[in-house]
Length: 423
Image (cartoon, rainbow, N blue to C red):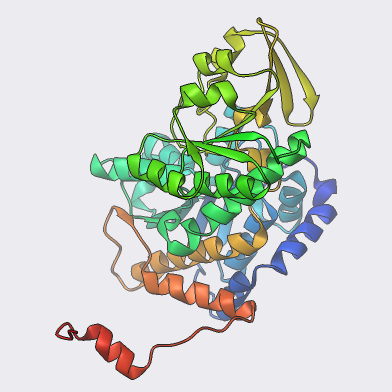
């Protein structure tokens, strides 16, 4: 259904989507606290935000929080397969300007981003930086009016830092991903659980006893490997970074080159953020029945062009699971077309962990607005939120879990600040 204000798969799904959003709201108390705090003062009144982020029930809660705080929004999904159509319909029915549906092609994906820029936003909110890249490449005139942006994920932050280093970035951006309450929780526990969820929904295989290969032992990869190990898998990590490989070893995982892992793996998950992690020679050496998927932001980690060259036939076995029969007779199963398996084949990260990530998004956008109102626009570059904000968010989260922690005494604070104290 199309209109000047939205385009979604089917508005009839709105009731179902509203129930999912209601479920998420009941598990996102930090955003609820921000919503209650700013509903009356409406600090975003008069400001327009263009968002490009997975359209999930958790994102819907963030959108509602911004609206209650006075913002005007226009939204698109940040991945062709991650949009939950019922949630998009619910948001459209509520009057949100949203352009997103599951299964869009590349042309449609960028058309949706273009539509979010039609209303000339003051702020951008990204997951993967496609919106920011679109602004910088095709809407350069908008950079003069945009006061800042925020970026949700590791891949996007990496690319934005490269832009800043080369002088290509035209407005300040907060690296929300680099907040402790984002990458130490969302990336580790959220990616870990949701990736396993996606694999299980797409295959229904037994994880226990499988050789489970994770490419990349960063925050996301370590979360996946440790969740798989907890389910009884024999885990293998592949790495290019010595410190990460050492950490994986000391945390109980086998570490080897992908060339060696490819020969023994039953399930492969890429989580590196770089291209060509699995290529032709790896597919050629995989055992019959190997399962391959990706949990990195972009779908370039698994080289499907190489795989197709080795393949004589492809068929869909079950939703989000395609069987590639190689010319040598072996079968390789690719999940979610090589895109984010946790969002394409499952529902993404649990609400409880996205609560903290999205609280950081809200606070980062608010910091940009407050700086602008004070006549002190932030310096162009990639910024990180203060750690004190992390501690506040974590404190609110703990309180909602009825967990109490100790506080330093005045004497302990004095001792910490006394550099002259010795033995």
